[in-house]
Amino acid sequence: MEQQRLTFPTLSDWGLDTTRPVVIAGPCSAETEEQVMNIALQLKESRTQIFRAGIWKPRTRPGTFEGVGVKGLKWLKRVKSETGLKTTTEVANAKHVYEAIKYGVDILWIGARTTVNPFIIEEICEALKGTDIPVMVKNPVNPEVEPWCGAIERLQHAGIQKIAAIHRGFSSYSETRFRNSPNWQIPIELKRRQPDLPLFCDPSHICGNREWIGEISQKAMDLNYDGLMIETHHNPDHAWSDAKQQVTPDDLEKILSSLILRESGPGPNGFADELEQLRSQIDRLDQELLDILGRRMEVASEIGRCKKENGVIILQTQRWDQILDRCMQLGKEHGLSDEFIQKIFRAIHQESINTQTRIMNT
Image (cartoon, rainbow, N blue to C red; front, side, top):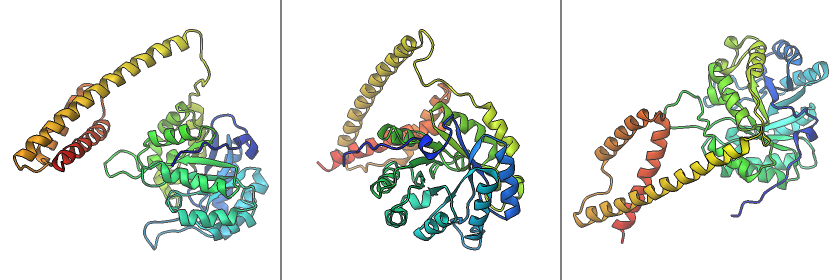
């Protein structure tokens, strides 16, 4: 299906100051009215424009804290009244939408588990028809751009115009230091397809640990994201959910103050020429990489022919282990991470298997 480029209102049309980063902050979960107001009053004095709090919490296992429910919406209404902050919460079904709108929540967001389900998205769209409320869509759990695009398109087809995307990371089978792998290439691809779409980063859910939130926030700014959603709690270690990934309001301010915001324009004199020279180098190296990969697949074809003629199975796990170990060691010598090498060579290995399978079947 051909990708349609959509147009979206800017964040200024949401009534926001668009100075980067636009900050969404607040606790993972609304726990008590006192807790919500304590955090909100502190955030009122910060750069935060939107107060977030989970009212309904989708949890993997039953018996864990699943949110305070509708009564928490009354607390968000009080936050809005007493601080002037806009409010936002996650909605996972049509009933949540109706309740949130009834209590005057300013912005809704759709969580990663919901984004991937077109049936629930359609129900949410139906509940949103006739409203002008902004909706933010988190990326799906699995590392795919198509379900993310699909949820956004369904919302717009339902008449919702004020839409933004939130990058919160993706599940991964491989071990990384992050709770959810950033997979930056996926939000970059989303932005390539829909350049007008406002894009936020949720470093709290990517990291799963407050220690790295500043690092991921800076990466998002370097990639020209519009804003950040950072979970903030007055006493994070005693939070009822996701305690490790929440920061205090003071720490939030330190993170924001440390961010370096780089120019998106042409830059200083000489910059464009230097950048063009470096990009030309990249283009030449990409060509060399493709030439080498093409030759490697020609060898893989010959290996497939040899195996077919001698009645040998395609997959040789011991050989694959040797290749991966050797390449990871060589990668270290070139300053390349194990994660990067594994991704690259797993893709190359899979293409080699596909090539040999075609030879076997001819």
